[in-house]
Amino acid sequence: MLSSLAPRWLMVRSVLSQIPYKCSTIATDTINKLGSGSCSHSYRSHLCGELTESNLGETVTLCGWTRKKRLLGEGIDIAFVPLGDHSGTVQLTCDSGKWANLIESLRTETVVMARGVVKARPEKDRNSSMHTGGVEVEVESLEVLNEISPKLPFLPSTKGLVVTEELRLRERQLELRTPHTQRNLRLRSEVAMAMREYLAHEHGFVEVETPTLFKRTSEGSREFIVPTRKPGKFYSLAQSPQQFKQLLMVGGIDRYFQFARCYRDEDMRSDRQPEFTQVDLEMSFVDMEGVIGMIEGLLSTTLTQLTPHLHIPPTPFPRMTYNTAMEKYKSDKPDTREDRSDSSTLNFLWVVDFPLFTRNKDTHKLESTHHPFTAPHPDHQQLIYSSDQSKLENIRSLHYDLVVNGVELGGGSIRIHSEDLQRDVFKNILKVPVEEFSHLLRGLSSGCPPHGGIALGFDRLMAVLCQSSSVREVIAFPKSYQSKDLLTGAPSSLDKQTLATYHIIPKNN
Image 1 (cartoon, rainbow, N blue to C red):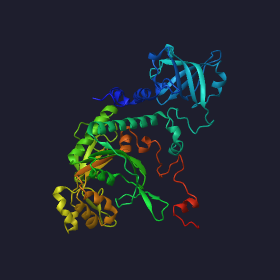
Image 2: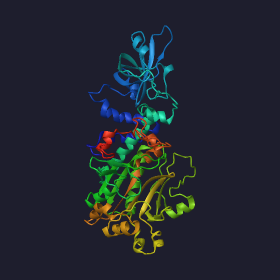
Image 3: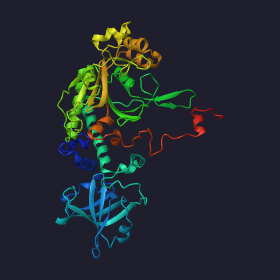
Image 4: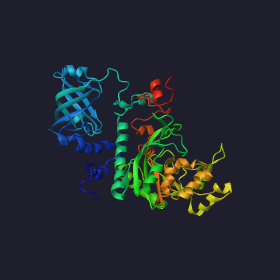
């Protein structure tokens, strides 16, 4: 199925699917050894967590962080020093006479390199709950690679570690070392790679990076503004690649995807960050069924391979109209599980037939229910030109949301590909300046094919797969509830000279 030129991690994917999620770090070890452990320029010959009885008698070199050392009683010249890395922990046995001074000064979480021979543990000391529980490494040389602070804020290797979220985010470099966070981020990497293979290798998608620095347009969400050294000129950080990916369809890319960074200045929630990642894709010459079928195949294939601990329903996923969801569940992202606490079952649901426009409760103006590029349902397209405002609220759209266990995982639509129709929506219904979108309108008028797509919230998906209550648990460096980066102290103040350089204050202030 895979060519001989495929990346080597793909060759072990059949093995990954057989390994329980709780042991997925072992699967990752196999990948890492293929990529780094076998490299002649690596400090180490093996990872700590991969040693078993099959390595008995081998001389190995290990690198990692020391765990809590254990000294035996008086008259017994052996010290036990567990050594760990992302793959797991192995026990080092040291001659406490030979290494007395070093072991005495060795703090927990010190970075060391150890060389020694793999030996079988005595039967009474074997630990069946550890992958390395049947072996130990008899140390021949031990070197401290880096000293650590005498007082760490917390020890990431501590079992049942409980610290405040503020401390965890401020000392994120330590929390990244915990098994829980390692597991989440490594699964995130595996899912991303499997999705790339499915889209690019199996279905002809092209991965394209679109700009982050964009212009401000009236799409709905608040944007982050980026000042420049040109007076009165600003960039806007892209809310999404929406307009760029539609222009890629105009340009004949045909099938596009990217793991896109998006930025929105919104109020924080457990499932929201000011910067986040979407699995963004667009397809030409496709209808709604084509996009939905592609996403169902993507998720079903990827998750069945990499998350066997979760129950993935068969495709096609069930569907529900927007009106039914609101009437039955009072929500457009209903949780359809019979038990609301069963996080091992993923109830995927498509919500369809959304209204194209929604009236703002405060201003009473019509707004796009999702975004202004969504196409109306063909049966309702003529209502766009109705002078009766009440009829505009009844127009159904070709929008579709994917919901899982009450979480809005993503949304997409078939797009407007006619310049005339798009211009009428901007000008006559939404009352937004058409000039803001002149680049898009030019694209629609220059041979735009029918097209549609979707954006899946990758952080939200990973939070569901990792059974985490917040997307912060699956992001390497997340922001706090107050949108602050507690690790670096961002956002931070700027001096007057810098503010003047970007024309935020006059230069003579």
